[in-house]
Length: 177
Image (cartoon, rainbow, N blue to C red; front, side, top):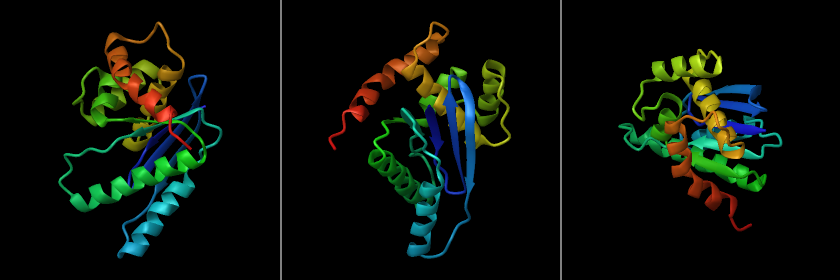
């Protein structure tokens, strides 16, 4: 099983694929809270709500560093690293994929708008999503599946993304315990 995780403070998307088919999807919604302790509890709730299963690889969307809201970026960074820590503790290898690489893998353009992501997911994979976080999680799982199960159906632009990420997969799988 390949797990795609799109960390978000308001709607974390999680999609599990097995043999290219969705076997589980989650949209973990939370609301902003006041105070450091309450915010930490919110992040813990998100991390603990993810159904990790017996994933052979988890693919997490990396951070968008161009964010103007530094408070959200700090909280998202915390969430991202808390998810990594949980995966590490569960001995699930993980790969971090920058948002631009994910967009290129799905649409051939690293700066594609969300509408193009939704359309290209439907055209190529026949899956329809009404939530961008679930669409991104699905895309991350599809990318992870391509890492684990190389195919001759991989497009040139997708292979370019995979080639760039290959070193990162190896590094992530070699973590010292």
